Image 1: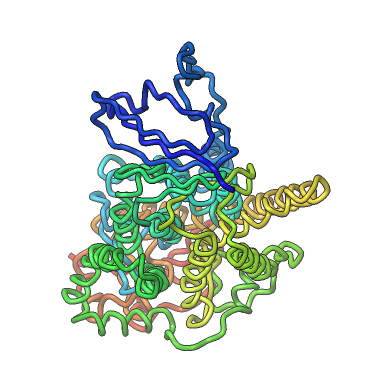
Image 2: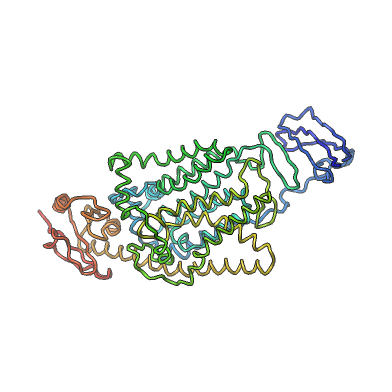
Length: 585
């Protein structure tokens, strides 16, 4: 026969705890204790028989001396693993990446940065791009256009964003799992290389992690399950104090992601909207999802009508710019470009270091294993645990179940990978950063759970993680040197143009016009290709008003309209030539 007691406690809202509570002996009796001075919320606590009541009695035994609380400053606190991961991420960027690529900007970076740089003309902004990256760097460009300063700021911002994004998951998976997931993601060479760059993919990844985490934290506050099967109902208060603000944070993170890259935000939102429609307790967040997506995409939609004639027209032009968005199995290109180059278009390069692609081939297997474990836990009715410490995690009954905590990020990762693995005909390793960030969460939980099986397994897991980090750092050194060499070539070409007397206002056209023109302080224009922005007639008209050059590479001849222009070899660029238009009085 089960025996127990039920106690009704009134507490002071200002003090944050109940005082002066006397408990009867645990013999099946019931007691109701009311305090006249209590003005705060009340809590109904039901405790099973056999569970000690001394820990719940802040005043000690009836009539005894009040027991003093242990000083808060001396209580055991968990190690700030996630903060240490973010600090290490910033350190790697500032020491291994920024010193090498801080002298110049890359091709796409020049496009994004030029939109908000008051010192240089804006480059052509093609249909697939979104303005969020330009808005991100705008405060820095308002002060200085020094690439080195910009990279330092972005390195610090990306480390802070890494911490903030994975911190959202701490109440869902625990501090150990969230920290390991951040480490696995931050340890990739793509994450480290693109942290200090003005590129959208990393920010989409961190926005996806934060959006998905807040979506899972949108449970209705109410009944709390705590270890030992003690149901506690606290009206208006829950252990997850930010629970009531979760829809706002979710909508804000989704809006920010859409502002950075609207197509990716749409693919991210699809599984979340589907879950909100299918799961009754999630339907109340559907307006927040749609509102966040609409708020972030409003600027893209307005620009679609202003510059391209409407949304269908912009989507059509975007598809043409990407080489045609149609069903296309792109897994082979993704595998070949995994360890570089940064852009594989057309993707005819051989695979570099096949032995360092094992993690990528194992990622689907680890994800499937994590889903199977989560499903098995659901069948057994097992509650949430922190796989890093083994502690049970208190969670609202209406909050995310363990299976959802695993399944939702996997579904979002798969959705985000669809356009890059099934619709494009070329590949860049940065394309899958959002999917890697989301899959790091269930994989981290699986690894920590396996490590708890025993010391030998834990040692194997530790060695595997360490080996992955070391191999990715080796790739980072190699690819950082490649990126630095390419950016340095753009800078040398710009310096050579200055030596030829080309100064703003000026115009540069040709296959490498965009990055070189930005470094030289000139405008850029193209008469053909994905970045076509002017006609030949308009280009010649502008060439008659300002200094103009056509860049060619590899000994190629210039376009027909520039055959009579004066060629100038650009030293140090590997065979680039600048064909300068004749000066007109």
